[in-house]
Length: 205
Image (cartoon, one colour):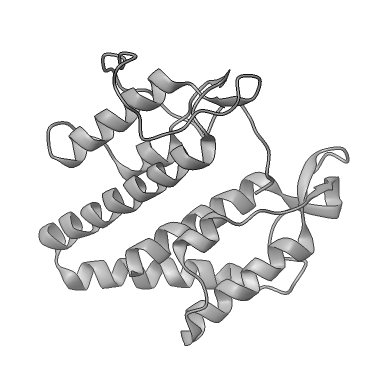
């Protein structure tokens, strides 16, 4: 995924919580006053809601954590610090969802789900280099460099053929250089595939 600062982390709804007072400490540092970071009150509200949900006080899914978005404001929270906390929360929710699935449906059903997920990913990974994903239809569309994406695919292929070469966190931190149009792979399809890989690695851990 291309590295760039945008007004959102990803996408979804915000929780509600009273804003912190000036006297309350925050686990996050703020960026310089002229730099952009995540809107503090939105971050505080969502983190509080997520932790409450993890304690069983309300419902939240792992995908809600993955997709959350925050406005970009000057002097806001440092994005890399917030993202690390959100990544840990997402992993915790996914493991909790795994445990709930096994409790409800049994270990055999879970293993069958994992096998299906691995087969689906391997079907893409086994395609020839340069042919693993769609190319954008528009010539000026921003895409991902084919060689960068294929390199990650080779690493994932090695992992799932018993070499254990990558973790969910490493895959999550992956970035791809930008290309234009059909010189690269379509961003949305690659992003969806990478996210599926991350979720599978978490479920296998």
